[in-house]
Image 1: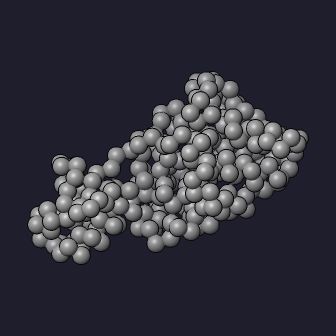
Image 2 (image 1 turned 180 degrees about the vertical axis):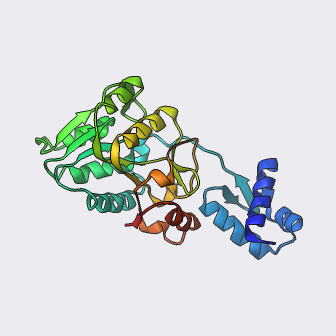
Image 3 (image 1 turned 30 degrees about the horizontal axis):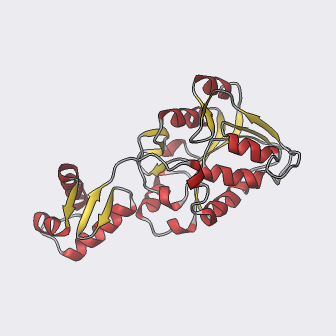
Length: 258
């Protein structure tokens, strides 16, 4: 049985039962336990299921943890991504940054530059770039987009935010998705977050997506940028060897592994 046919039949079993045992897959597909193990590992790496003792369970899109939790998770990987993203920028550019833990890490790197214009809906990022956490003056032009405030993400959103975004043209939009899927592109769980990222991408000359390895291959609820519309993907070294990363390299114009 061909690999793609096996994957399809495993997906169908999970869609029907939500949880399926290795024994059931072996019996239904007439394949070895070792083949099942390899297939489940690959499908888990693509974010399509979660392996559990004796089998696998279906996974569905989930909201991200609160920003405070994400800010302390995978810091080393996000720092590497931020440093690689800085290398894509040029002096004097205008940038969009959406709200996220990786873009927040990027803001710390941008704060060491001067002469940049940064437009963001993130209160956290705006304060970092304004030097509020260090009591210093900013050497960059920082603009916080208006709109309704979401306390969980510490960001603005809504019609006012989208109208504000459309007033600007940026050289680069640097966006941090909930998931980055080879087929569906950069995705968010919340509608209002996807709307902000989509508007930023539409108003930017170049779209750069920052996604640590935990987001590679992960689907979520709403696409805001297709792979064809993404100019550069930046991820971390732990993504190497993932099947979803290989698929992203084929779907996206440029992928940088930091």
